[in-house]
Amino acid sequence: MKLELTDVAENIVKQAAFSCGPDANFNQLQEECAELIVAVSHFRRDRIGWSELVEEIADVYLMIQVINEYLKLMSLDGLVYNKVIDKAYKLRERAGLDRVQSFNRVEEESGNRGG
Image (cartoon, rainbow, N blue to C red; front, side):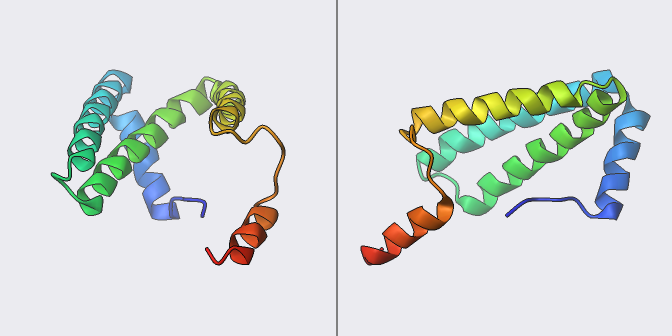
C-alpha cells in the first residue's frame, strides 16, 4: 500500500510549509520524531497499543511531507530519492535478502507451507 495524501491534505501541507517557515517546521519535525521515539519505546514495553504508535508515525510522516516541500523548492528532492533507494538496498542486505526475489514468489512459497 502506498500512502498518498488527498488533494486537500496536500494543500494543507503546502500552506503549512510556507506559512510557518522552515525554522518552525524543522522544530516541529524534531519534536514529532522525539515523540515517536518515546512511543516506540512504550510500544515495545506494551505500555501503548498500535493506535497510539500509528498516531505518532502519522505525525512524523506529515511533517516529513511539509519538509519535503522545501526540498522540492530547492531541487533537493532528487537527492533524497536517490538516498532512499540506496538505503532500501542496504535494508535488503541487512534483512538477509541478498538474492533478488519477487513478492509473488515469496507469497507463493508462503502459501505452499500453509502460512
